[in-house]
Length: 247
Image 1: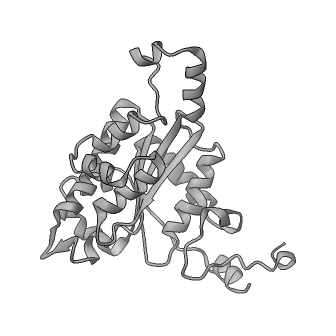
Image 2: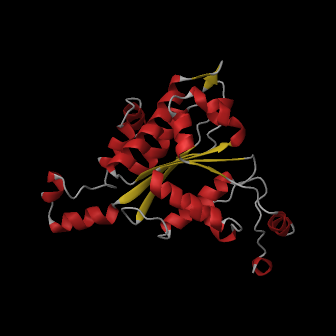
Image 3: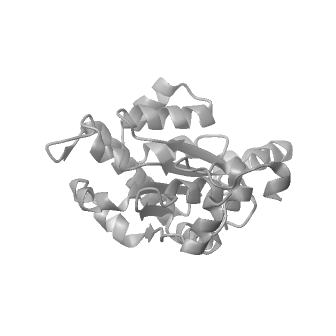
């Protein structure tokens, strides 16, 4: 098949994208495992060595799996808000959410800086969520309810390359996280906690190089969440690697 289409199923150091999921091979078991873990816990810290396919496992594995209906969640549709911390974690998270929710990035950033449940509040007040027990829902017409159900979507928050919270001095200096870093990490943890407690279809995934696990103690509560829901990406077997490299 690959020869006929002149496609190499190996992307080198670049991560596989969602559009390339057809060529993402050898990780079916891990995809099933992280899907089940995220379904149950609402939070997942995906760790592994550099270059072992952490981002690929999410973008070419978990996301296509969820959109294809192999993820048990409240709704069938998905909204994916992904970002990298880089040097402005709050701003980057806000831009990602803004693009999906149709709200100005500045407004989203202001809300996120409130902390606590602000990220979950943005979702629950959006067109992507409805509560059949609420007075607002009961007051809607049947046509309005149908439209709400059509738009309803689960929310997946992805913080890719989480180690940037530690590698960029703007985020981490003298072993102390910046205020913006603390805001974003606290938001993700609190969002996952409240989503699990109240059965809200919001899920949080982080990908991080495993050699930064020790640094995570700088964030209050983060080591507990890593202990609660971590998945280590194993190395691909040599036969699979050689098969891909020989394309």
